Amino acid sequence: MKVTLNLSTSAHTRERVALAWAVPAVVIGLAGLFYLGVSTLRAARDYRDVHRSVAELEERLARMKEHEVALKRDLERPQYRELLRNVQFVNQLIEKKQLTLTDLAARVAKLLPGKVRLNGLTLAQQQDGSYLVRFTLTGQSEEAVENFVGNLEDSSEFKDVTIANQGFEQEGGAAGPVNIACTARYVPEEH
Image: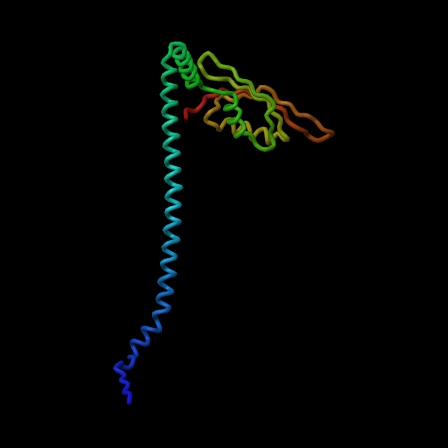
């Protein structure tokens, strides 16, 4: 007769629960491990790209410094020193300039009402260093021209406004456009 003996103990509830959760825990662990591996590879690739970009920029900076040194060496030559002196002289003259006609036209345009058109603008420097400006304008009405003259008188940059000539154009029986010529002394504000 053969006697079989079973020496094992019965499975406890905790052991059964642990065995049931072992498979999902392994799957989740493997997924996390895969994610970390992919993230590590991506970070390594990004680091390599940034390192390559930095190396290229450092190389470019070194070439630019070499080019700067070569240019400075060229400027030390006698013929270039004279050119540099002339350029500095011209730059000083440009810095000393006080007025440009385009700047003046832009300042006058700010004073123009919508129904007034600037036809002519002349500028003459006076002996006292101020500038005399002559305007010729056409307005759709006398009121529009008066608005411009008022704006001109109220401006801190124009003094001694004088109307030199005023004319009305007749269209049929109604009043038409108004032509005016005036002068003012221009005193630019310091900026």
